[in-house]
Picture 1 (cartoon, rainbow, N blue to C red):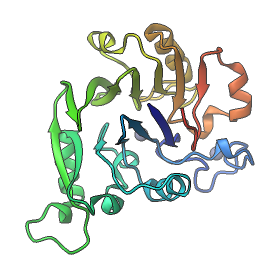
Picture 2 (picture 1 turned 30 degrees about the vertical axis):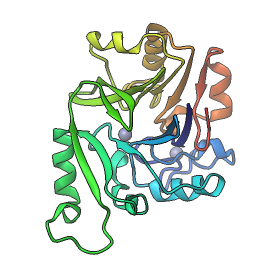
Picture 3 (picture 1 turned 90 degrees about the vertical axis):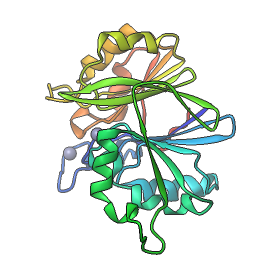
Picture 4 (picture 1 turned 135 degrees about the vertical axis):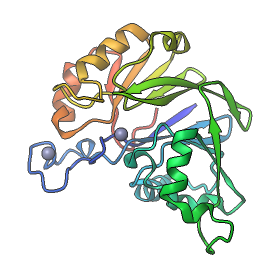
Length: 253
Ligand SMILES: [Zn+2]
Ligand SMILES: [Zn+2]
């Protein structure tokens, strides 16, 4: 399995527009973070998790090193713009027929409203051909690959993380319902959000993320969805335990 980090930043991305802090003005490329998303390649299939407003730039970068125009499915974690704002740019990946997109019903409904032109009966030529599949918190398959949704709480909002094989992608969570931890046993790679040090109403702090990793006990963990208040990559990476890494845009695991 190959996991490519397409974006590792919070909703604003780093640098934040107009910010002159040391992270936003850093010359270390690892401090430039597009909106959070990963591409998973497994058994010859490609599955995208989240499709934020930077998707176009992320794909231009990705296709420079590895050319493809086929995606087998798109998993959405929740409806916030930083996770779905690039859905219109999926049109390249719809040329061989409808692209399967998977989301819970409330997320699917939000998308039908947000980009309603995509789902009209009489479609404007060239728009993306998306087939929205409404999923529940139950395992399902994409082209033979088993996907296990994991309920997460983004503050008060129920959202989903996903487990594929021994990899799990959990972003934008503040808490995990106790009964969901059973789905997170024996992970090789856990990706989990760590926004910043200060408390936030709907996101984990760095300390919360480290506690979750301690509890879940994956072989390796990667932090994602960082804000500029997370600090400089080069400084922060020295403070983490041996099996916990800071993800950055372009990292392949
Ligand atoms: Zn987010
Ligand atoms: Zn800043």
